[in-house]
Image 1: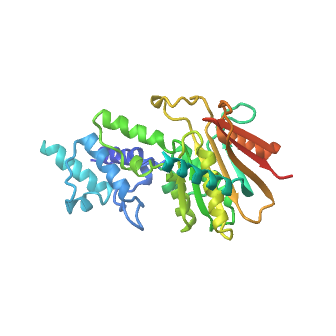
Image 2: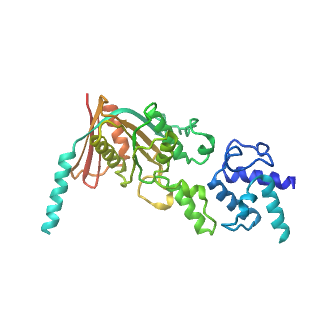
Length: 88
Length: 243
């Protein structure tokens, strides 16, 4: 799981061109979106969705209310990836 | 036929009324990808742009923001006229390549791929709600953009106009006929009715053969040496600086 979290942090940095950010700068439980968190925006959410689909074949529904919860933090993204890759 | 002639006469009348236009230039800033010494120039750092916005800038957008920032300084309320032949075409090309290979389109690329993306970003950074105009007119984009900027200033002299011209060569796939090794050139001019540097601009049918130079380079020559001219399609654009 820690390996996966590390991998997701690297994916976030690469997919979103976070030039001066290192994986250790992103805490596992920091809210990724919105004020007071890591500060990503809605374009980042779309970009990240594409990167997750490409790397992990994660299935995401466009209007799924659960997406907000899945994209909350590195922890929740790792759970999403783990759940979907185990289900296959 | 008679109606067509009439129409043409009107256009000619309009030209003779508005030309020569005077461009009063308060400040200018130029960035070229090749320095005067022939070395490649470094893309500016644009440290005044916050990192979360900066990461999405193309190199052309970085240069435009740098030049715009250098031009306006304390003038936070100015209309913006942005001219470019190709704008952010490199980004559009990347998206077309993704489509061709069946990949999903990048939302970041999409959101920043319009011709005048950098002018829009600059207005957001400055919280500047004054009007913003974008012009694209082939190889004469610089001249027509300046024409637009001068007309806007003539119409309302109390609000300065920031004129931005920016072009990098189109990706090779486009075969525009322009030299691919032509340097990226970004030129910013702050037009202010009270400026003492004044450049007279004319555009006349002369039948002169086209040259090989970028149009904006001829204008920069006028600023530096007093006079510059550029021809294409039998029309000659001429700029002359006062004194």
